[in-house]
Length: 520
Image (tube, rainbow, N blue to C red; front, side, top):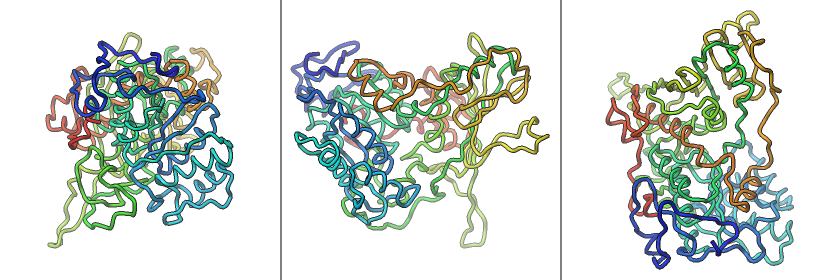
């Protein structure tokens, strides 16, 4: 495709005619089957590479995590951040893990020890901060005299339509916006990298992944960068060290943010410069409340994906790949509940299908494949952990606050950390398996560097969206099971729940007008 050296887009199975008007297409061409048709960039405004041969990148999401990762992108000499986007303009009402850590890292990035975030002068965040950091870096550090300045948008759709020279986009928004933003980028022929999850609804995640597969765009799913490796664990399992593998246990200390048992009733004023309608995006209208936003959004089914979507991508993606875990057929949730007192002095249990529980576990049953038997995968969060192995008893040892454990008929393999670092055989016949250096890791360099190199080479990364369906399926079934409170029988081929019909509503999203994958 002659319009850009960084884009090698081919449509599968068909290509839209180039005579279709760009805005007409964006506004309402229907899409068939799972695919929203991928359109060559010549149709969508003739996107092209900047004259300097730098990769032009748009940055969506200027919250705390977005700003934390922004410097890594700015420091790449062959990248130019041309636009930023966030529905909240000012640094008001943000939270973080330390009072000054993010501020100090941004000061270092722009070489200004006196920089302040503005807004409420607490935690940096928001569109204005994102633009300010980008402009300051290129002026004060990169000394780029040809940099025309960073454009700033509150609506990503407007940005993608107007900024026709964008080659790639990095998406750091809240979970409920990931799918629609990814779809919008793919439809416009823009390479993308994005944080987890792909989407916080199963069907939306499936469609986005299929869109990526049906294009030649480079996609990179950021949590891949933190996964461990399965070589040593697989060698032990296949070598018979622990006998027949029965269960995989993974537990997290999440949530480490406040979660809420009731829907907020009070209606505080909207922070200055916050476009609440754009923040809601595809989700149903409701009054603004700070308990929905910023650090705490992940605890709501509408806006987040819960603890497994937050952390399970980091630990389990490599497990899914290594064990070839596909097509779960049964999902068994266990969840905490909250009780209250009525005005009549009686106790009651809150009927909560809007927020994730404070603590939970979820068992997924996977069928056998050509080389192993059936396997149960059990996820734990909120401080719940699996039973302590007997081998720990003699040393009066407890399980770590986060970890992973592979349980076989004859023994156990443990990980020294949450995401498969330094695994060891806790019990079993260790002599049966080949020993591999337990420090073996992915050949790593900066994830954003890897993404940029892949875009330029017209290749996929190891963290391509194309490989992300099994983990995407699991984290969304986890949410549906917890939300229903029922054991679910799942038909993976049809992506439907067969025994609790009403739970299928949790696998899909009712889009507000203008926000479906067809419309963005």
